[in-house]
Image (cartoon, rainbow, N blue to C red; front, side, top):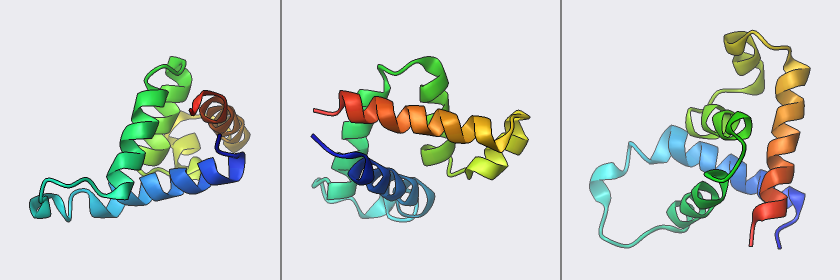
Length: 98
């Protein structure tokens, strides 16, 4: 089982993948999945079972690449609300990763 630190590191890699690599390297597929692509699939399979609030937060922060500050402004929430939800998201992932 992954610890919280490993999950946070994985989420940073997923954010980087969706923000920078996925679209830039899309034409260079050779039929073999990279370790980051496997990682994103693993997290995607877990997050699809999350409560909708956590699923939406995961998509906004890690797939769309928003920061917690920008998301708080966009959604008209306080930063602390987004921060607390992100902690719940990390806890959910920790509890549901095999």
